[in-house]
Every structure is written in C-alpha cells, then in structure tokens.
Amino acid sequence: MERKELNRENVLEALQHVQEPDLKKDIITLNLVDDLKVEVGKISFKVKVSNPAMHSRKRMEDACIFTLQRIFGQEVEVDAEAIALPKEEQSAETRRTLPGVQHIIAVASGKGGVGKSTVAANLAAGLAAQGFQVGLIDADIYGPSAPTMFDLVHEKPRAVEVQGQQYIEPLRNYGVKVLSIGFFAEVNQAIVWRGAMATKALNQLFNDAWWGDLDYMIVDLPPGTGDIHLTLVQAVPLTGAVIVSTPQEVALADARKGVSMFRLDSINVPVLGIIENMAYFTPPELPEKRYHLFGEGGARRLAEQMEVPFLGELPIVQSIRESGDIGRPAVLQEGTQASEAFDRIIRNFVESVDDRVNQFPPTEKVDIKMQYPKQ
View 1: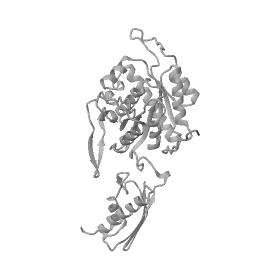
View 2: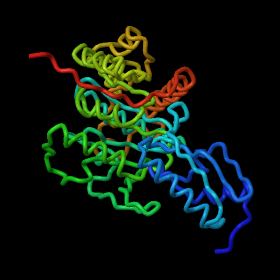
View 3: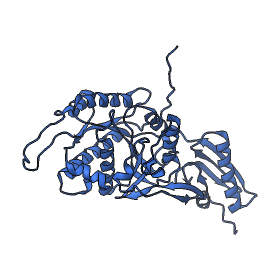
View 4: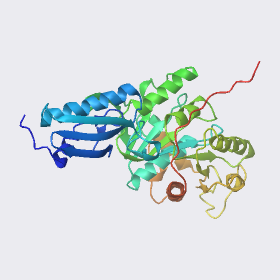
C-alpha cells in the first residue's frame, strides 16, 4: 500500500475505516474523535466509545493505532486515548441499542381488549404514509398480533449481514419495518414462557435485528404493568408513552395505573397522551347520531385529571376491525371515518412528540432494582 502524506485531512480520512463496534458506524461519522493533533511523525487524539469497560477502550485504541500505522507507516507514533462517551453527548446515533432510531414510543394499556395493538399498527402505518421512516416491535409476547395486522402471517424474517455481522432483517409492509415473536412460532402455537424467557426474546428483537435509521420506533406492549414493561425501560431510552383506553370506568382505572407506572420516579418516562378507543357508534343510516355505548368522554376526563394531552378518540367502526383482520390498517383507507379519525390522532401525536423533545431532556435507560418486602 502506498503511504499517504501525514496531515490532518488524511488522518481523518484514515480514521473513517475504524468502526465503533456497538454503534455500527465509523468514529468520524459519529463525531467521536477529539483533540486531534498531527505533528511530524506523531498523531495524538482522544476517541470516545459507548462501552466504558477497559477491554473495550483498549480494543478501540489498538484498532486506531493499527489503522494509522498501516496507512502512514510503523515509524509514526500514535497516541490514541479511548474514553467513555459522556451521557450528555449520547444521541440516537450514539446509542448502543437501536442506534439511528430518533424516537422510541411505547403504546400501552392497563387493560386488555381496548384496541391497543390496533392503535399501534395504525399509528405506525399512518406515520409511514406521511413519509416518516417507521418500525414496529410487537412486544406483546404472549398475544402477538402484528403478523395479522400487517398481512405477514406466513412470512419469516431472514438473516442479513451488515459490516461482517449477522442480524435479523425485519419484515416490511406498508412502509413499516415489523418484527414480532409471532414470526418465529407457528400460527396456532401457544407461547408458554416464564418471564425471563419473554424478556430475553424482547431484547433480541431490539439488539439482534438490523433496524437502520428510523424516525419512529413504535413498541406495542402487552396489557398491564409487568416484566416486559420493565425490560423495555431498562433496554432503551423511551421518548415517551401513549396510553390507550376505552371510556368505561373499568378500563380507565387500569389506564390510570398505566400512566402512574411511567411516572414513577424510578422510571420517569413522559406520557405523550391518551387515546380513547370505541368512543361512540354512529349508525350509517343516522350519520348525525352518536351513541356512547361504553360511556362518554371518560378518557378525555382522565387526560385532564392526570394533566397529559388527549390525542383523540376513535369511533366504533366495523371497517377498523375488518381492516385489522385482513392485514391492511384502516388508516390507509383514505376518505373513511376511520382514516380521518386516525389522521387527527397522528397529527396530535407528532405535535406531542415535538413538544416533548423541545421542552424536556432525552429520557435515559433506567436502572430498576427490585425491592421485595421483608418476610
């Protein structure tokens, strides 16, 4: 190899060949090189790494020294000091889990059967239809529904090689990248796992898949407040959470607990808003009538009481159920009552995310230490 002239420009170009192993990009693109000095026969600089462990820092130093001496000659002295990436400098690109994903959003409900997965699927598809890059992780391990809702029931993810490493390649439909535990089980197979196995599976959907660059990652959580929820907030820094409820009190009581969980001091994830599903029914022959079968305005009142945004309401419409069953989200059927309702919610959701980003610092992953009562 012909040696290059030792100057700053060529050193920066050479360091583009050094990858940050956890972040999957080169250290120049990620802006991880500081205090670069290029003198006659000597190069010195600091390089930030996402993993602060000594062996990780040593590996990075060795990689930089090897690359530079290979290009500029063994006689060149290279002083490379690897340091931990400060928390205040961490961003979507420099995050070890889901690097390149700008906003990670949890869609949750305290109670099952309120349409949380339907909302998550339509939220993802609607955002993608507006030109955003979107992914969806079906974290409802025991009742995965994303394969059905995205017409991917009989599809299986493949492996993809990226920078010499093997990853799961998410499936894609309607512009949304999708992964679900349902892709790795037979259609009628029950998933009977203890909590530890479920949380391990969820971490694999995050870490063993190649998601690339996304504007939004929607995470469809199971009902309740359990292992999967704790795994999520420990695995990734959530931008925020959306709570789905129906208007009746039995659902609102559980939705209130869902909001309270994300507000715990040990979790502290912003609640972006509440969505009311099954808000009312309008008969086709009486378009001016609204029948509130499950109560009126319950989720809106809950949002006011808990001082979180109300993102909108969804009517009881047969086409929403039919669309989910055939695998084409209702939000994509333009000009319908369902699509117009989802479009309003998506506009409010995007505004709520923007407000959250502008008003509050990024959420950090949490370290939850379980406390057990004394016997």
